[in-house]
Amino acid sequence: MTKHAFTKSIKFLVAATSLVAINAFAQAYPTKPIRMIVPFPPGGGNDVIARFVARKLAVRLGQPVIIENKAGANGIVGLTAVVQSAPDGYTLGIAAAGPMAVNPSLYDKLPYNPITDFAPITNMVNYPLLLVTHPSVPAKNMRELLALAKEKPGTLFYASPGNGNSGHLAGELLNSLAKVNTVHVPYKGQGPATADLLAGQVQMLYSSIPSVLPMVQQGRLNALAIGSAKRLSSMPNVPTIAESGVPGYEAYSWIGLVAPANTSKEIVTKLNREVVEILKEKDTGEELLNQGAIPVADTPEHFASYIKDEITKWGAIVKSANIKLD
Image (tube, rainbow, N blue to C red):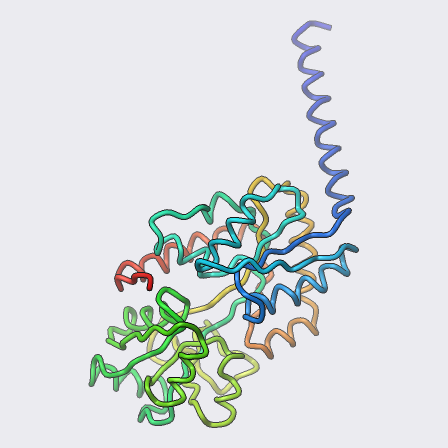
């Protein structure tokens, strides 16, 4: 055997051995508890979905999946902790629309790059934003609201939990696509924003469904339209904003699962398979839809592409509306 052939054979054996070792590790994984970092406080939509999936994932993997809430700085604290963790499959992160798709346009410098610093696993759910109004607003449907906004520009005020959040951007997206001028009023949290809407101090709010559904059912707020591409089966009488005079309008708050960059493809594939199967269970789908969430369960590749598209979409809105942080 020539020296060249011998060297080539050694390289082949090393590569084959490494591949076998990686596959063996992925098949054995996990052998200890997994932590799932949620970059928001307990009790919110991200936390609820994380705990729901973690509970079922622990059963399927045979190891505890421990939720760790690391809130702060619009999700930056939690996602930074994910990036700084070992890419061994034992630290996962909840990736939401704000920290992943909006923050790159709000901050000059981020301690993470949402495209290169994470290994996307799957987008778990989309939370379409529901547009609700105070009963005193004379417009009783979306088309009437648009007509009112055009007739009296600058007189309709919409609340949000703060500058740069999904509710704020949903309103700016409507302004941009419908060519209207509704005015944003930022609050320090969902609670104060909803309270002032109920009091009639502002006229509108874009919100996740669970936060406002009881008030809609009690007649204290009107549900005009929803930001999803299609009507929800749980709210069939509520039209989409797109079908109500704003073609192309979609506004979601989404919640996905990621790992640190360089996590092995075998582990990412295994986690994707398990989480997707959880989300496709009939009882899971029904429970999520009742909460106003749409199960997505896509591939790592599709989720990576979606993140890029979302960064571009919301970055354009942040720029055009000249959105600044509080």
